[in-house]
Amino acid sequence: MKKNLSIILLAAMAMSASAKTYYCDPASTLTKGATSWDNAISPATVRQNLSGLKDTIYFKGGTIKITQLSEMFTVAKSITFIGGFDPKATGKVTKLPDYPSATPTIFSGDVNGNGIPDKGDAQALIRVDYSKDTAHNSLVFRLIGCDLVCTYYDGEVDSPNDVLTSTANCAALRVLCGTAFVRNCRFYNHVTPNGRGSQCVTSVGAYLHMTDCELHDCTSMTRGGLLRMRQYFINNEATRPINPDCVLERCALYNGNNMGGSDMNSAGFYGGGAQISYGPFFAINTTIANSKGYSDGGGLNANSSGATFISCTIANNMAVRAIDQTSETPNTYGSNFHIDKDGLVNIANSIVLGPNDNGSKQYAVLYSSDNLNSISTNCISGGYNITGTYFYYKNGVEENDQSNTWLVTDKATTPKGTTVQHMADYLGTDPQMTDNGGCSKTMAPLAMQDGDNVAHLQELADALCPKWTKVDASVDQRGYKRDANVTCVGAMAMEADPTPVENVYENKVNNDQMYNILGQPVGEGYKGIVIQNGRKYIK
Image (cartoon, rainbow, N blue to C red; front, side, top):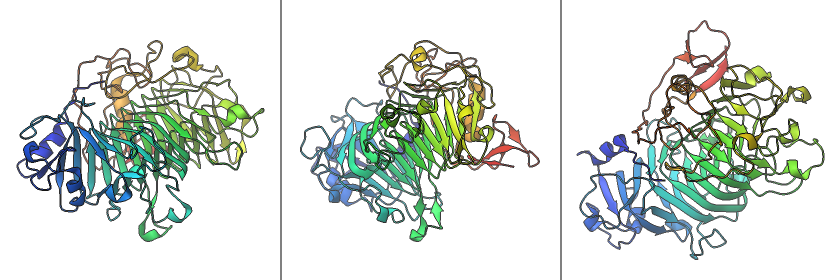
């Protein structure tokens, strides 16, 4: 899945005359030097001196084994980790690797070396604590070209006593506040059998932008098998929350699992793939697939949060409670994803299909509950979607007549039509994630379905994406150039040109311009739903 992607901004930052750079070799035992590959220091030396290092650390390919909690990498200041360099490299860095690297830098918690997460393995790999940067304006962590694998935590990732303080030292990557950009990284084989997720990636009150990343094959008892975003509370005060933002660009989340239980009082709720609590979630050219939970969204759960999907594929996720029950009561809260507490959903140029959709609420691919707003303000189409059944609560009452579907030709209005869109017709009966080029696995459609034009998709993205970062709608999940006039629906564009493209978006910007739901600029006198700095509200 090699991709020749040049990260110009980061390379320039790392190699400028004023920047500090350090060199680390997983095979090294040196404690001094670090000025080139020829005197690269050991990972232990990096870890022990992180408080005094700054700017950029380059890592050769190889395995950095973390055997206990005291050996995890704890970051408290702005810094960049760039991995995947050739173990035979000499001199200084002149070019970044092509990712995925043939010689990845692997942060591993696999203590016994059996290749699977089990008791005795490390419970954490990298912890970023920017809790003093609650304004997200000073501290930035960048992680590029690294694999984080094999952790196991037989406890609560977010225990009841940890709701405010967020002191848990667990999860492969845990970020508290500040801003984090994660690019060309892979996270897999992370398990917390008794914890509220995610043991893979957990972000608490942070702004997180992940690009060209894979998160897969991870398990938690509840709340996000692969990814969890939630609030941070200043000075442990529940009345002073800091909400997280999450942006996924050209990412793959698959084979997540909330193992849970088999009855209403058991765990296994809230997003087998991801749970987003109290913060906007934005995904573009991203696939969320083949994950499962007991209830409340097999793929994604967004709690009191807005969720936006542009050119995404969200498919073959399952809430297994639907399979266990013999009737439609109680409901399953969405086989693909569940939005509750007035979370607002925007979907454009995307495939949202489940394996058992028959038009009933039992197998609804999108379930919205605990809402006070009407369907027209809860779920908004940007056009050109292929989705299965949508079901929702209104004013706390189940509305059985709102099992609607969107068609591939739908406009930017509420769902219309009653024809159920079957996953088998578009993706096959058992679609899998496969290598189709690029940096992450994709789910290939059976045939191209004509979608939107790139200009309109970019307008939507600019209006709805949080304004501290930026995304590119002109490429598909693989980084291949989409047809500007008519692109394919979903994360993988079958018409795309595989010519490598350069894509650098890590600009911090503020934009007080208001937009309507079509991505068009509007003024102060506009009435209706508006988006401003990535937040949506009604004027």
